[in-house]
Image 1 (cartoon, rainbow, N blue to C red):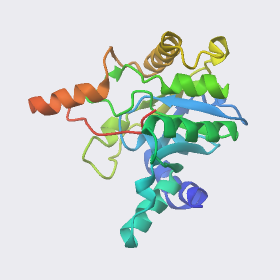
Image 2: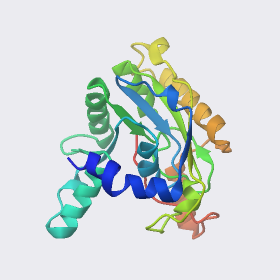
Image 3: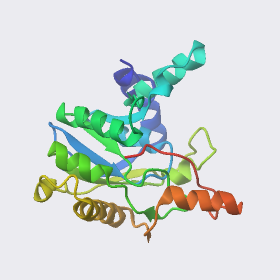
Length: 241
């Protein structure tokens, strides 16, 4: 309901004019049909800037609680989430990851673009972390390509704790689609899922230039929190895959 209004009237024009985000490889995004945009995750604003540089709508998944708030604050949160292309994932009666997979399948099988952050959360220190295999499972089951995406400079514009992005050079690099057809019927094979997920993360890292950390980002954040230190000041949750 609010997506077109936000992108073309309320948020899009002023943000494009102020930040002038650049994009490389937009031709790698198909003009029609379902596909997964698998991106690194540096800032909350990743989910705002990625759709801004593309003609097609990008759908993200979010907790259903974002859409059920009461009063003016609840309405504002719901309107913002809908405005940036987020749809609710209803997690009652099942695992959150399974609910996200089913909802994601509906999105891509419906011919839309689904934005996913394979790392599962924002990078705590600017490195790119080991991906969660949900992105591979979804691509194999749906039979849609995975398009690697690198967000550039969003962590400089909006580090954790900063509500409004600062002026910075922000860009998006989009790589060649990764075809999952070679893994057909292997959506329950752990080794196959890990292999395809690693290919995706490697492709994203080549686009972004980030150093690779072969560990789970969320676990590393918990360790940093327990130790009372964070080397870059970056932390927080992102859209999980």
